[in-house]
Image (cartoon, rainbow, N blue to C red; front, top):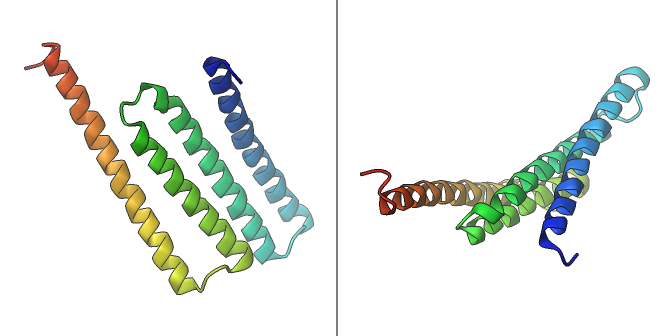
Length: 142
């Protein structure tokens, strides 16, 4: 799409539909499991966790997509997106295919999680100090 406003609206709609679909599928799967015992319990838990991860990622991406145009720190937000996608992908791969030994998985996942928290902290500090500096520069605060 050539028009950035339309592209943003389109991305937002896709993410919203993904989030709503994840919630709806999780509800249907849960009700189906309660009444009809559709899946073996381990498959049900894997499917439910996968749906939750996809929903959380869609919600996170919606928030970031909303914040990116106004943010002065686009690189930090994009690094948060990459780290979140890595964590989601790692978790889903580990749940379905046991891609790594559990000890190695927890080390890698923990490392990425710590990096995510650290980058989030840096983003919050930069945004807070940047706002205060802008207000000081414009003589709104002392």
